[in-house]
Image 1 (cartoon, helix red, strand yellow):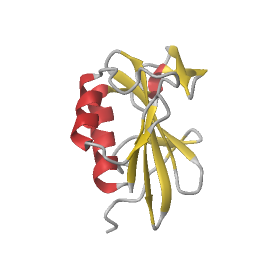
Image 2 (tube, one colour):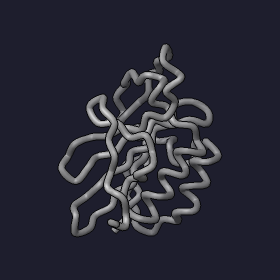
Image 3 (cartoon, rainbow, N blue to C red):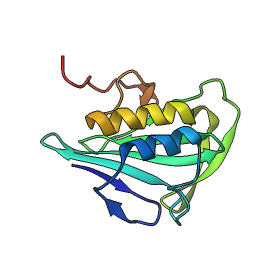
Image 4 (cartoon, rainbow, N blue to C red):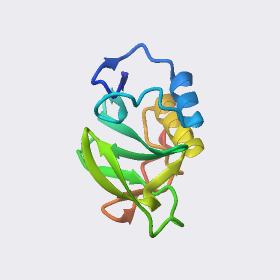
Length: 143
């Protein structure tokens, strides 16, 4: 089951994946006006529950991170060329300093979220990081 959790703390299963992907691609604030400042997608299946958290960073970029079935967290290394920048984001309502190199352009955030909505798994071709090291999710469907 796929659920959408908005920034007001509401969860919905009657989501329109195309609307979520379009909002991300546009870099718009549609789902991020609430007090937590982020929204999330979760997928529960026989493998467990995976989460993809979406936090707007600035116009047209996002900080994306995920939680694996075993509880470990991964994040998307979106813009490696932005090494000197830092940004304070509100994640779960708490201010967190995030290096600029972890900000993902809106078009890539939309693609990664679209893959998650379509398959329930993290996009294996995205630049995921786990504890500072590259991380490759298993492909889906398994080969």
